[in-house]
Image (tube, rainbow, N blue to C red; front, side, top):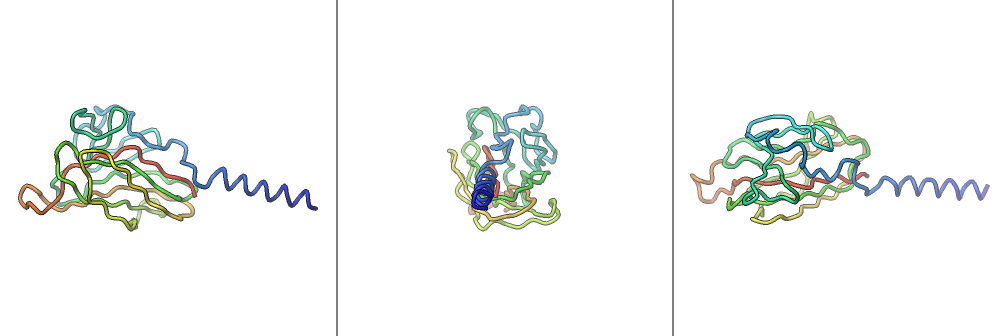
Length: 188
């Protein structure tokens, strides 16, 4: 009986250790393939990256070495000065919930910062909930954003760059272009 209990406890702890806190297969999503020519214009389109199918709405794959902020050779670039949001959205669910999400972000070129949020959906993208943190400090380097979660079951994520209008018309509006790279979801 003792041997069975020890085996059962060891088996359960190994199972928990094997899943909780580890990045999902295919992550971090570095947005390295396909090449930038695949989605080189703003507007809405779907792109299949290493991790799965993503929607880029008012976003493209940017590879301008002197302006886009990335590790590697390219990153996602989200449009500036819009009244509507720009989205980088997963079109697939991850089955084991999420304990953490992290990604890198930066302002394109010499653009002003912008305002963006991380959102998640547990109902296949029908409704979206906002993570607590609002980010407004994109700069000309790469910064890392980290969000802690305790989400169980199916989940998907998106970055919503909020459409605040034109910073060219109103100096107080910070709505520059945004780069996103190295997006990682950790299992729960």
